Image (cartoon, rainbow, N blue to C red; front, side, top):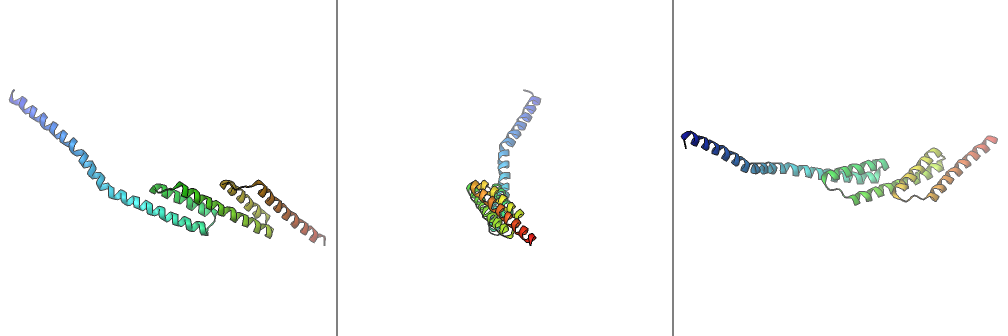
Length: 170
């Protein structure tokens, strides 16, 4: 073999060795990058869990003090944050949704009765329709009960009309 060929073989050997060295060292470098990212991922995960816990506390407070729509928004915010944090519990969500709708059904019925007493029939009907929709949502709707409320509303309207007619005749 000539000197020239020997020199070329050595060059090829050095290039091959360098490539093999790069191939062997690259997984080590990648794992070091992941280790460097791990603390920031952990910090982000803790932040997401903290946000989900805060959203849950806001939801509980909202369900106690506010109305249906505020509660529904808070429920959806909690669900979104809990999904992001990986702490979402479907059974807890279903339970809270049920409680929210039950509260709305009770509030709507109370509202209906108050507006019937005040003879504000438009708002009484609005409350009755809310009661109907939300009770259907949670499976507590009773058609006979709904028809009884409609009859109560119609009777109250008729009584008011009769009083007005009687007052007009005097």
